[in-house]
Length: 315
Image (cartoon, rainbow, N blue to C red; front, side, top):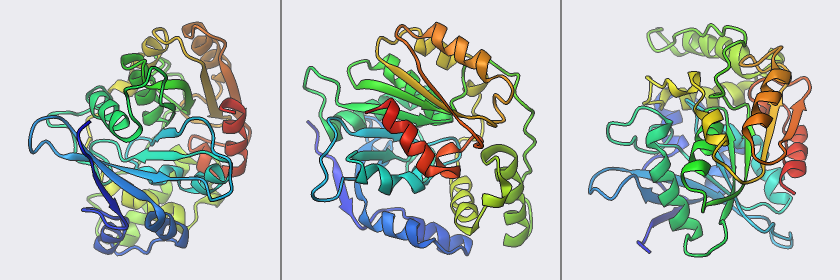
C-alpha cells in the first residue's frame, strides 16, 4: 500500500486561510471541528504532479461503542466537508466514524487534470478509500453517504467499485433524469463589488436552492456557503441533468436508502414519482424517507431530524 501523507491541525489549505482572504470569520463550530479533524492527503492519480485530495476524519468519543463500518460522506456541488458541518458531532456521538473528503475541484482538493464532472472523480475517490480504510479484505470497507451532487457521485462510485461500499444513502441526489422540479434562478456574485453585495447574492441563492426556511440562514450558514462557492473550480458540470444516477442504481446489488426534503426544489411536488422511479431502479427494497419542513440541504436545515433518519437507514 502506498503511503499517504497525513496532517493533524495543519494543511496546505485551511478554512482559516480562505476566510482571511475573503474577510469572513469562521463560526466557533467550524473552527473547532477543523482543529479536531484528522487530515489525510491522497493523490488524484498515479501521475506525478497530478495533485491531491484532502480527507477529514472524526472518530467517536472515548467510551462510545463504534459502529461496524465508517461512513464516507460526499458533499454537494460547490461545497466541501462543511456541507455536513452540523451533523458531525451528533453522528460521532452515535458511534459513527466519519471520513469526509473535499471532492476534486472543491474546497482544499485539487481538480482532476482535464476533469469537469463527477465521472472523473471516481478513481481518485476509490483510491483514497482504499488507502485510508484498506481495500485488501473481502468485505466492503464503508457505507457511502452522498448529498446532492455528492449523492449522484456516490451512486456512480458504488456501481463502478462494488468492492468498497456495503450500503448507499442518497440525500437530495439529482441525476435521476427528472427535470420537473421548480426552476431555480440563482444570482451571479463573482462580478459584484464588495463583500456586502456578494453576501446578499449568497443569501438569495441559499433561499432559492438550499433551505426551505429562509429565516434559518444565519451568519454561519452564509459564511460556509461563501467560503465553499469561492473554491469551486468546476463550473461546467452537466451530469446532474441526466439520468446517470438512475443508470448506476440499476447496476447495484447493495441496500440503497434515500432521504429528501419535502420542499427540495429539485423535486418539489414530484417526490412520489421520484420514489417510484428510484425503487424501480434498485434491485433491493429502497429505504425511503422524506423530511417534512426541509428543503434541499436537509442535514443543515434540521440536523437532529436528519441524524435520526440516517440512523434508521444505516443502523
